[in-house]
Image 1: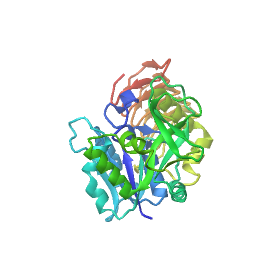
Image 2: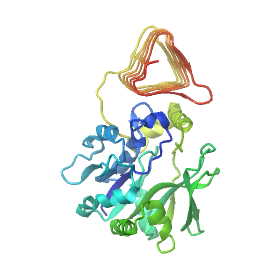
Image 3: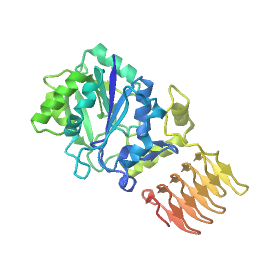
Image 4: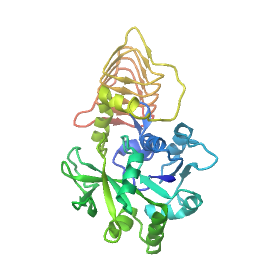
Length: 367
């Protein structure tokens, strides 16, 4: 079986606010060195998927820069490899993923793959697609839908899709845009099916001027197609707000979570940047922190995550915070419960404390 991987960024929601002002959701930095899309790409790589198309929406410059030729995920190939597909009309609002899939039909037609895996680009977790595909074949389903029982915080807005299954595992219905309760089976917007079925569904929806693959191709055909569920049991936080993004980052300070992603099963790959190891000065004090390469620590860091190239000057204190790449914290600054985007500068003696939720500092902002 040859598999074509699709990473669908068309329907991303801007629930990370300032962090997605200049980038798509899949490109948001995560856990000290990654972007969110790295997890899906690494899972595809582990499954031996050698052809991957990333369907982008607007704000795609960051994802283009991060993915490059795809060599970090073994996708820099003369046959197959990585296809980053920008919107056909980048200055106009997206009309849904159906039209985007249809726009690039030739990419699929040229592929020798007979099966497609479709996933969003923001799931943090290790999905064993080899096992998912085996179960898909064993069940003889037309479509297999991945789901996970909800274990996140209570939602203010209905954004998740709840699956309703029969006793035999067949997907009977899907309630779109719900605020789930604990234990509700939530669709991960990840699907496995034959390439021919995928193309037929897209073609039919496009002719009928329908625009949403989940609603118009899957939910609308539950009576005519055998759609089964695959329950994902592994670690995967539900990221749907600044608070949940912050909490899921902070979980990477847990040694068990670090071990599961760095050492167990397969590696999560990301864009390589050759930098020196972190430097700790005589006045530094660091505890329970994730420090990436290239950092220069002269102050105090507690219970925080520092991305590559962050500078913490003498007398500065950073607690319970996430400081992204090349952030600079000058002398006697005090930060607590802050998320700082790339290249932010905190000038001497400034104080910033997030209270009910983390305080967000925009990219290149000066405080």
